[in-house]
Every structure is written in structure tokens, then in C-alpha cells.
Length: 248
Image 1 (cartoon, rainbow, N blue to C red):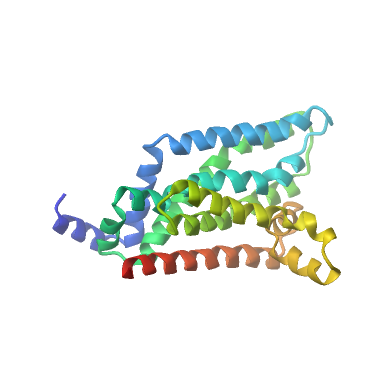
Image 2: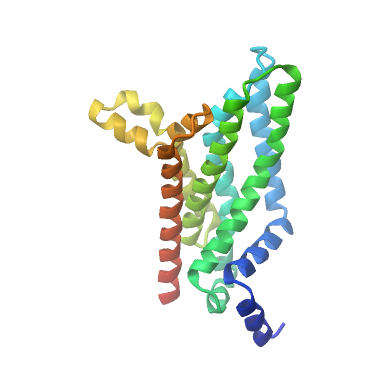
């Protein structure tokens, strides 16, 4: 396809849609998404069924309790290639010359990665079906848990995108994103060791505490705003990072 054809096609379609389609095709034409998805299901399935029969209780509480930690591992694995692969292969400079804005590039890549992450979560609905077959679980916390999972997934994907925009090394991008996500996931567990004046702050920045609140079936606007704000902050940082790379 000539550069003129590419320009016409890009101008006739919103830039982020072009990038979104391009990234989705890249995700599902490579084995990475499938490998990460399979390991995610193995880990999450083990988390659920290791206690499912032991305590003889049909519920997803243990699954949702561990989900922030599991997401901390697997979402960075999906998002690490978003910009790092482009920088490593040398196609990043070509990407920046396309007639689309940096915001379009970031939004397109973010939405593609988020879609891959949510598709990874989708098969876990089988767990809900299993609980319904073997018991009569309270659907409120389960529905709340999945709503919280979407917000958690969105925030951690934005963190992964930012980490990927900072380096051409996918391994470094993975560990940077993992470090940020795991801190946000477990920091609330250490609140009891901190001075009382810091407990409220730690609880506020803890992703797991906001997620657990939603997962209890209590949808508080403060928890929703937390995840929206966290996602927005890291997307803005990603845009700034790419703009700096373009100027550099």
C-alpha cells in the first residue's frame, strides 16, 4: 500500500481506530496473547479450585481476593510489547510519521491491549457457572467483583502502557509495570505496620482496597473515581512519554 493510500485511509477513519485494528491484528496473530491467557486461566483456576472443594463453599471470594495480584503479573505481560516492540524493531519512528496524533496512537494501543486483557478474563465466567451449579452463591458480590475487575484491568493496562513507552526492552517494561501494580495491590496489607496518620493515605492509594470495596457489591463513586483517575494519569504520562520521544 502506498503512502498516499495510507494517508487517505487514515484520514477517512479516526486515527485511533486505525491503530486499534492494527494492534488487535498484531495481538491475535502472535502466540503471546494465547500463552498469557492460558497461564492466567491456570493460575486463576488453581486459586479458585484449590479451596473450592476444601472448604466446600461455592463462592468466588478467594478468586477475587487474589485477582489484583494475578493481574499484576499477567497484564504487564500483555502490555509490555505495546511500545517496546515498536522501539526494538525500529518501526516506532515509522509509527510517529503516520498522519495521526500521539493521543490517537496511545488510545488505539491502549484499547487494543485492554480488549486483550478483558478477553483473557472472559473465560473466568465459567467459574460463576460452576458456583451456580454446586451452590447458591450471592450474585451481588460476584457481579460487583466482575465490575471491579474491569476497572482494575483498565488501570493496570494503563500502567503497563506507560512502562512500555519508557523503554525498548520488553523485560524491563514488564518488571516496571509489575512493580507498580504489585505495590498498589499489596500495600494495604502493610497498613497495620504504619503510623496511624499514614493508614488513610495508604488505603486511598491501594488499588486492592478500592477493588475489594466494589467486589463486596458496594459500588461507591469514590472507588470508581479512583480507577478512572489512575487510568487517566498513566495514559497522560504515556502521551507525554511518546511526545518526548517524538521531539527527541
